[in-house]
Length: 455
Image (cartoon, rainbow, N blue to C red):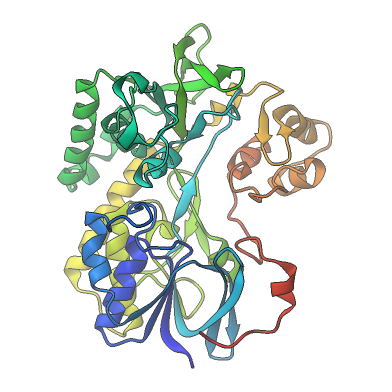
């Protein structure tokens, strides 16, 4: 029996879409890889309460069939319906859901730009550090959960990279007891001035940024714009980082490096939409202002593939509020209702601000000058920058796929999710959308089985 709508992803977009569609009388199934709803933005520890921001959405899930710990690895057409194949839990039990319509709300993951020393213990993703704190895990550089950290045990955590997430991460770390000696932003905030109309239309976003910035200044965190961590130092773990001034193209300015002692480094350069399911279906993509590929959707959140809708970060990084609005619009479209003008205007306003942020924080081409020849770009396969550069200059590679075939960069466990943007840039390309038949590792025994009974 096919349901009316299957929603993949229980973050803000998926929750809003599922609850709205159920309210319209649709039979909705919500699948999510996590054990509890909320996505990354509303992550919470196992057994803990649902975060305040997600409570209203979760309460509205009455009538929605929620399938947690279901990792959807492919979606295929079967007649006039769609089959969603998933593996469930640690035993990777197979499961199948049949639906007349599918909404993809699969979110995003962090973009990492490598630099010498980025593989040292104690160097973590900026979003990863925040997720650890939200999940009640050990604070980077402290070794104990933040609730048990003693004042003398406070670690020094440098926050670096680019994007609005850094302010929130630094504030969260400081509030949890870490000392944040520096927030190192590679972009220049004056770039926002080129997008004044979008800023004026979103005063709440500006106030939120000012709130985070003020909190950090009160904690004596030094804000360094147009700077980057260009090296991490240590033996068994990170002990210090080199912070260097950048030019307008993100190239290090000679003679400006300074060494900053720290116990941990939280670093990230924005987010990348997670598109594997969509591109596996053949959905069209577009180039977002930050250079990342995102799904191309119409005014009703429909993709180029009939019967497939998308909402949230898959359509371009924009935050929880925009994801919520897009989820509502998609659900109304699926239910045959015209979205109200107020909702469409909210989306336009929030998307304009998201595009302004993306353009302001787009990595400059000169960041590859941070790399020395021995820097591992692909951590899984231990492929260095020198090997990738030689594949380009000596062996004629002109794209990331050819580099992959010549060096194995991107053939490891993460399948290029971490190193993909860096490998593409070293090959002289913008990152291309991932195109793969499986969105996650699946046991061969599952692939050999015929479609199971719908659940």
